[in-house]
Image: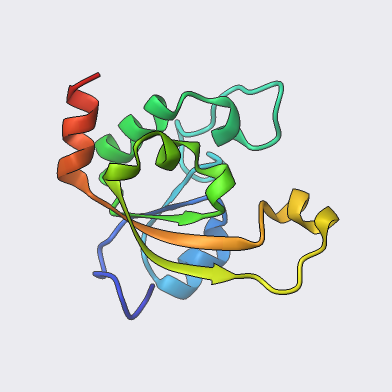
Length: 127
C-alpha cells in the first residue's frame, strides 16, 4: 500500500493496526474500534459487516471518502452487493490456514480493491 497508493488515500479495512502502520495511510476502521460512527449494534454475528446492510457501508465509504478497501472477501458483503463499484487490485493467498483459523481470520485470502467512486455515487443515487 505504501508504494502503490497516494499518501492521502483513505484505506477502509477491518485489520487497521498493522495496515495503518505499514502503509502510513489514514484508515477507516470497518469494525468501528478506532473510527467513531462505524460500529453498528449487531447481536447475531461477530463481524459487524456481516450483520449490517451493505447499503449502509457503501454510503459510509462514499461519505467518508475511502479510496481503497482491504479485507477478507467474505467479510465484505458490500463489495458483493455492488461489484461494479470496486476494482480488484491484488489478491493474496494466506498460507497455511487451518479450517479453525479461517473462522478467526476470515478466510484464506485477502483482497485489495480500489473504490470506483463515480460508479459508487451512481449506484447509491439509483437506490
